[in-house]
Length: 228
Image (cartoon, rainbow, N blue to C red; front, side, top):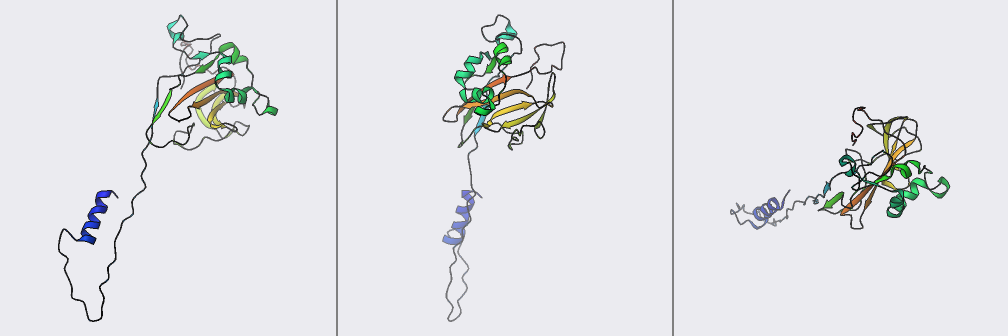
């Protein structure tokens, strides 16, 4: 129901400006009764627009591949050092690498030390319009990701496979919620983790990615094939 319909209804039924009402004589002792008529307004909201700008790429090769690399295929990667992650996304880093007793997952830093981690631009995700109360990862249909219960069952299946662990499923983290996604293989090993790091106004977000073991390449003839 829109405002125009309501105005027309009020005009024609209450104020009677369009046509004269047919009057019927009242019987003796009867009083004229007037019953206002209104229609409820529908709740409306302005949708937010979410835009992904560019890409974020973690190269599995040893060392850091990024804009400083000489090879064109490496120069478009997003590798940064583990130290950059530790200073730039402390909550994510602590959750990954702190001991279980300290509230972490107790994961190894070896892969991240040798190969780096991925850091996107600060405006990798931008949000405009609407009222935004939170940002996080969800399933394709907009519903919540299942929280990782410590076992590989029940996650959202992907087309990705770990080189030594089989199919990878996605979960939200039990501590950082839908800001953090865990990719867990069939052996219940965490293969990678992705973290959404929004600004205070929730108008943009950076994304970090950390990998812990190799992901299977479906095309042996192309060592730089991307996966999404």
